Length: 91
Image (cartoon, rainbow, N blue to C red; front, side, top):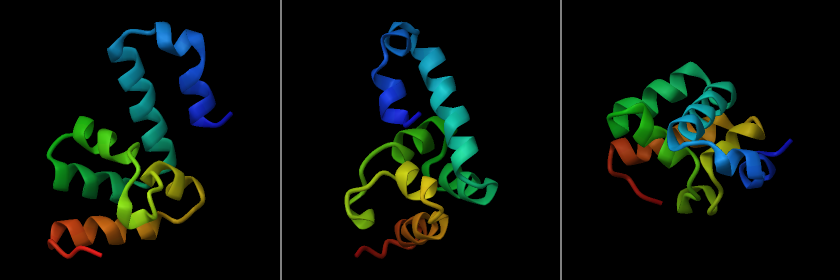
């Protein structure tokens, strides 16, 4: 099941904020490798902030979410964007 389908389901909407965040963090850990997660946390400061970024459309990824790019097996593209943010190099 696609994450967008899951997020739109009524039972997900009924969960409290903590349960939703825990689900999204678990999904992030399944989708991204350890190095990418560590890089996001290092750059953004917390796992919650990394998770927020991971599920947002990013202009440098052609307005795709890092989540979607990682699901396609293109983790390196996401790492390159993080590198550019870390070194303040913008596309």
